[in-house]
Length: 192
Image (cartoon, rainbow, N blue to C red; front, side):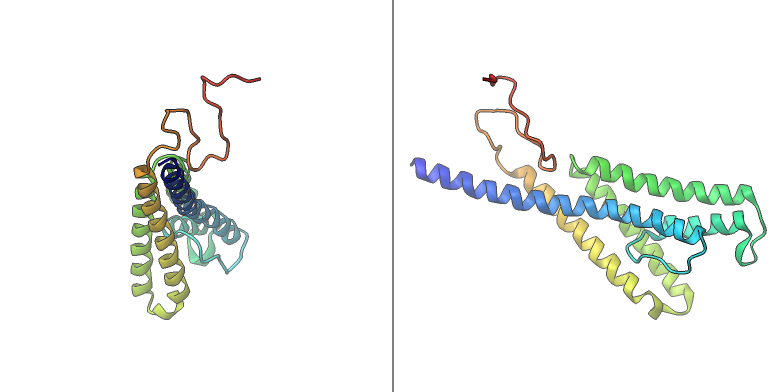
């Protein structure tokens, strides 16, 4: 009988590890989307005509319009107010990605918010693709967005499955969060 309990605990530990890693992958995908979006805006501000594909389109679009207004590029009149407004909208979107990333490390519901936000961003990208007149130019963007959506969805699924697993220690000892690398001893344990 004791062997079955040990075997069951091993299976649950393996599932816990697998689901935790997938959850972590979805969370870090959101973080990388935010980071590459910031890098892309900085590259654009310094005059680069290229960008990383792993980016969010809404903050990037607002950001480039804001930079164009501030710098007077591409025939835009220099208008600091309109530029600051567009840049602030881009900043709100970027901050939202980082806030969702921060809280999604502990709660699965925040991954839902991240997935919805990135799906809306993808819909905006498809809209831009359709009105651009050159949809073939967006092929790699669409592939990368689909992969990012899949990674976030897999992370969300794993986070929900992780929450349904039985606790690690049936005696109720304090256990670590799935995404926290540090294991804290229980309050009842005595240090030698």
